[in-house]
Image (cartoon, rainbow, N blue to C red; front, side, top):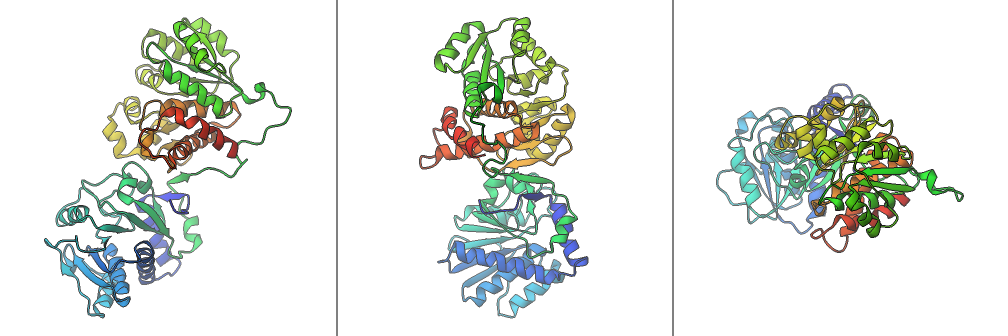
Length: 494
């Protein structure tokens, strides 16, 4: 990941910023197109310095104009350039048409793309479709995108891979699978969410020297989350500090056969800095928790009154890891929700929440797409189709800070824009990862962070720890327990 700005935008917003730059600040559209083409060509030369044979795939809109500029610059550098026209060239107009005519001035013309092979090129530049695509990709673009994806040649996408929805990060039926993408003026939120990272590859950005005043008029639709400066979130501890100064987390879960979930959450809470961590679990499990990790204070809880008494000493409650969905679980959730303490709700507690009417303030919900679907009476596929809409609905429905887990985990509190975590890796797709996140967030709440800060920082620590854990080893085989030492390192840096 390059040094990218944190602000993210919807496609409509980036088009508005483009309009403002041209109409209100007098920046020529032609100059913006030339800057875009120059930025992409510079990236091409630095990324693939040995590339000689370049194919530029152009559509019939403004995105094609960027492609014509790139082709012209490549010809001027004496590279072997072939420009393929997809769609009706007679639809080209304005600055895109002018860019094509300047390219033709170098005796370089676009040829219709039909069945030509792209295998023999060093780089294919995707300048087919921009951010204005609505609906599914149709012919002749469908054929062209499939040809790009099947060619095995390096692919550089202009502004956004063609066919990718700039807002949701989902393909419109099909999308170009790029090795890298150069985005302009404003980073599109869909490039970092859902399937966006798989299609975009490495993301680069150029603001095309648009006046800063343009950005002051448009509120970002989302923000990329990153690790803060050392000491910015968790202050150094006083030398006279004791365990009571750093909060007491009470974790509730670990029904029959699911002890490991609450055990992982408990250790994660300790590694993230909680002063005390108690585990409320089934009576037959309590001794096993303490034997595996003596620092965890494990309690066998079978009835609601016992949990009430135990929670009187807690700073934060986290419920859900391995909780189950039987009557015991329901009783535990009812007590946890009723207590006037910050609350983190995960896993089976979320599944129960989707079945019963419970509401409160001061809580954090951490669903994966399946759990989010149950909470919204939807489907996981529908959640993935628009994760930004889903996290917004959840935050407002439950008046909670919501962590929608998955590739590009989203964090949102009512009244704020969603934050998106771009750290993490596919190795995290293993059992227990969500339980570890629950423990981290609960520990940060116990140490005095606000709901929003605990959720955002906790997600970054969790994902960053996974990235540290795979460094030099590889993603395959990563276990949730492997995150414990990196978590400790990151909370001390944050």
